[in-house]
Length: 87
Image (cartoon, rainbow, N blue to C red; front, side, top):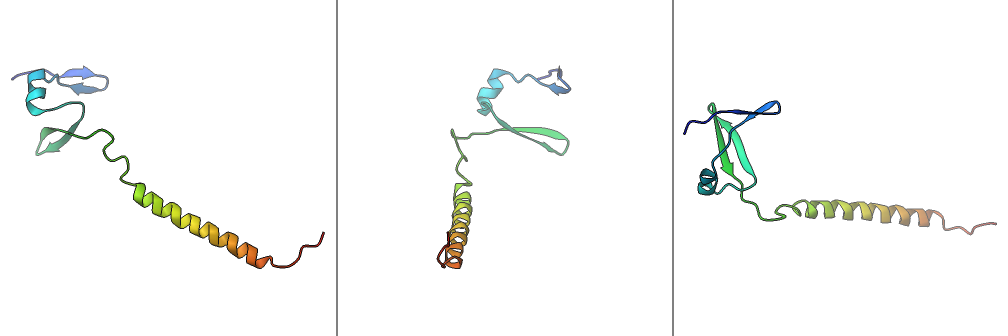
């Protein structure tokens, strides 16, 4: 199929016929890369909210480690101040 490039802002675009999109199961997102001078477009199939919690385990460990440091700091401060206060 012969088609033309269209100007879109500072870029160029190609209209892809709906039949092509359906046949390739392309919806909202695509993975596009350059291979040996050709543009290759692949469909991206992601579940809703996929990947939202990938970093949560790592983040939770970092937060827990910081809380332990904070607890130790407060504990050290209390031990250092065992004397009676004078008013």
